Image 1: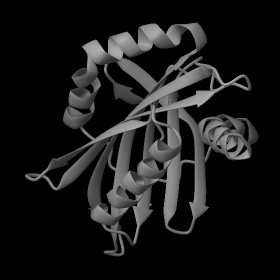
Image 2: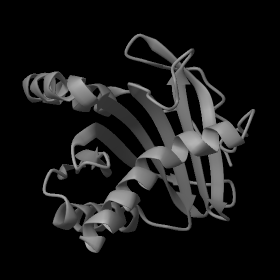
Image 3: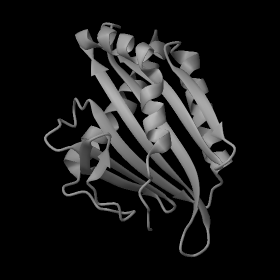
Length: 199
């Protein structure tokens, strides 16, 4: 039981960390020179939160104006890590998802390798439960990774991602729609012209 509570705490912390940090940092710093808005699928996403948790790692998140960071429905994000290869970054994410799936069978993921461009995509599903053990958040993410070189010539990786969420009573409809239109967001993210980043 203690182990389940620990897993629940980790998942809730993972889901809520961005919103806590968003409230703590106003206005967010634009570390990668992508101030927004980012125009994706007919909507404008503005920079809502950023973090520089390590000397070679930058994270930025974007929401539609007026969206509630505590209960957002769709978020755009871009991360940059320097001094790492795309295969290492993707492998690290896959290993993280494998560990999460071992603790939560609902977690699912699919990896797509574009051999022509050298890019990777990971399409994955996460969930979190409330204190009574009922599923109260479902999150679907589509991450696209591409290799880049910074101004010093050091190799790195850019992540562009789209995160969609559903809460409580809306989860069943969310999952039905996901099953029917699963490839839509994957294709949108795959075809999107990625923003140029600059450290």
